Image 1 (cartoon, rainbow over the protein chains, first blue to last red):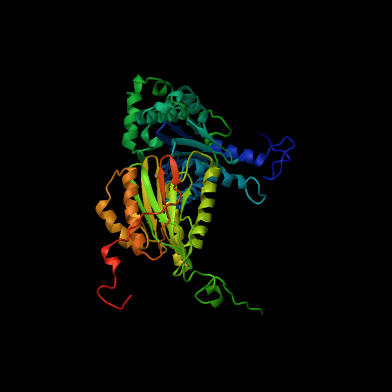
Image 2 (cartoon, rainbow over the protein chains, first blue to last red):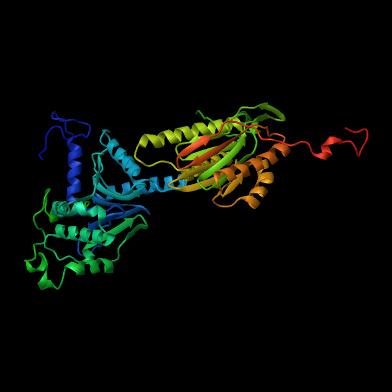
Length: 272
Length: 245
């Protein structure tokens, strides 16, 4: 994507019918570290890669609880993501207060999308630079949605966003047809395996990822490090006896090839 | 230097003119509603009278209405406020339907929405002068609840408003049980309505019974109850006090 004379304002169309500022905002999502979501008929699992600014700092939170029955994972400008999570929590709690009933996730997602759309049609605003994977329940069961800076939203069986998400998507594409009937445990395992794909060579440890679950009879919560490590241990055996890839191959450099632009060291500090 | 004093015309505490905008007394009122849960859902009974003080002025008022697919609302108290509430609920149901996403408002949601409305109006000293009964069935579960004009709200297996609280509920406490059949439920309600007819001066002998089940709402055609006046004590009422009437 190159600079052109139609990309200064979000309210300027290009002659080919594109809004470049919105597309640039979607690029910001690709720079953030990976976030993954998958769902079965009754459960949704959201997982993310823990990335820290430096060795001295702690990692940024990318998964937020919106309500007992809704969680969101973000990729891109985390500050924008936090603000939108706060909006979602607010909508959810207002609905619960008035109707004593959980807000159906499909309705929340539409409100979120409409909010994002506003920023694509005001000259004094900019689009939100964050992609959101929203997992939640409504009357018909579990759902997973992806909300885009463009104001579009899509429903998915499984999806991955952020840097090196293509590797995770390839893994999910191979397996997604079985997800609807998956057990909760298999779903979690698939999520962690998908996260592993995005690490491309780095050893998978529980400290590197955050995993959250919600289900029809299970309020949203994070899995603790022990539980995650237990799942990892079921498929990552002792270092020399890896089932597929991993330690046996040379450890990839800290900044391996990725899609969508700049290398790790060039990631803007505000994006995680 | 110009200095404007803010005038709040809605403030009925400081502004006498605004007083005329808030509810002070009810004018056209409906009397009791009685409702019970039964085997397939909820049964509700009300008469069709609208009183104007002590005059039984209107005799064809439907005080029970279906709300959406799953709920039934009955109201006693000021009829115009009931009609206002129906307009609020109309808008609520319309917006719910416009989502067109397979989710729908159930009786619990409607009941809580009404509780919020009633309580908020009470806080502004401008109540909707009604006691509302909300019954419904969704996903096989029956629901029956009540909200008063001051926002008191609760659920129960049987509810009644106004005089019904005093005359009908004792009967229901003795004779209601879970899984009543439709016929038994109607008989029980008719028993309550008959007592109300005898003893509540604002009751008229023209009632409707509404039923709500998983299939939907049906409100019966109006009918009247049989009454009995041939008690011996009524035959020669002045026997004990000659000359009186």
